Image (cartoon, rainbow, N blue to C red; front, side, top):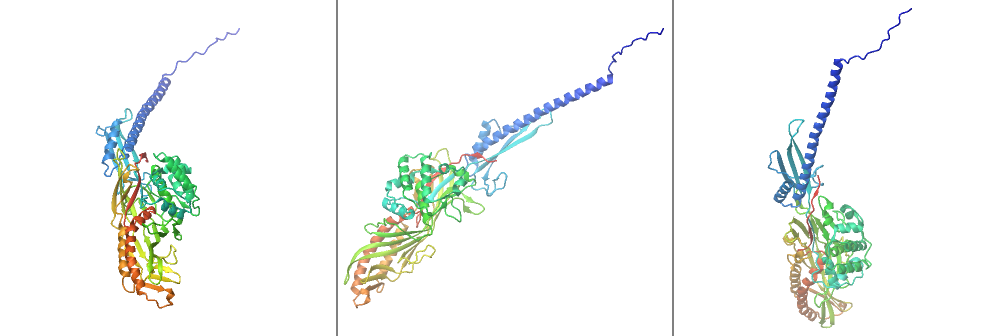
Length: 583
């Protein structure tokens, strides 16, 4: 019998000690790695939040500093430091520093990506703040410095025109001028125009009325005079600028928009070097012009002149009243004026003023009725005095714009030089093309009655009105008050014309100065008594013209945006910029 096998069972083997030691090491390594990662994350997170806190401090300090921009960076520096301190950053604490630099942010002249430069920066429009703080690393090593930089920009804007003024013009002459230039049929009162001249429309209101999002899109928009009037009406109806006469101004604009304005000429709302336009905007960032304001009346006058620029002279039906003397008047626009919106100061690269307004360049042709004169052998006939006047453009520029805590304490400085003028006593040339040079070579026809008598002054007498030295004007930041219109001189045209006309009287008294043709020259009628009667009549008549022409002509020229020996500035607004981060 076989012996029974012993049944055996496997017994668990005891673990090997070397394997236990290896497993524990792996666990410890993993734990230590996780611990280091967690602790490192804490350090990295602490640095991240420290940097984020510093960036917030830099942003707020730069925004505050830019809001108080001045010419020497003293106010922005003090404001930025105070703001940083209010937000818990001490520039004098150990391991901390704060640097404030003023300069210019300009995408046109400075390099990307910051577009900020502190050298040769004029005018200052931006503040760059850098804050640095030493942040300890609790687990990953020694402390390290963390910094943050912010650049904020704020643009103080001036808006103004040179030459535009209602002065004491009669409503009929304003209506006649606009009707002639725009082909309209207006019959509004002077009070309506004066009220409209005091109204203000923001550039942002025009954008909203046009349905565009950027100032650049607004400036590129092409309109005609009729469309501009509609645009102004829509913008004024939604303007946020206070207007005590808003309903009156809306009614005036409504009447202008409904008066069959010209649609023949389209022009951009933004003026360029090659094309006339309504607004000349000169800014590092054109979107800053959103808050600037303009006058709808000034805008319509500029549009009227753009519509007629370079065309034949326009008859102004209402005429020009010189006391009791009636005058026919033709206006020819060679170059329209422009409204200016922009920053103060000069461009260092070009040494030119950044923001400039321009007066119009125009020609006026007048025929002044001197009244009836009774002549021997002829009887009573009407005598006239033909005058021609051409005015080259004047300039105005924004020298400085300072914003303070109140509009009354804020101010802008505008310089201006009036245009040159050439006044001629003589007949207008038969070819009145705008491309033809101005001429003073045609003798003046004083009396002309067909087949009866023709009297001419044998020589035209030009009188040059030189541009005076530039004048400087100070305006406060309050729109609609007494200092909005300022003028350096209002008598240059009249005094020069008076001298010219007095010289004409003396010249006409000389023998042979008057050319008289009586009865077609067919009969030998003695001309001595005729000439004597003419000379006796002309001396007091020309004196009367000299006394009245200044009061009548200067306001008309100013309405056209023209300066002759006089610098009249219409300050439209000073808009203090709201600071914004740009880098």
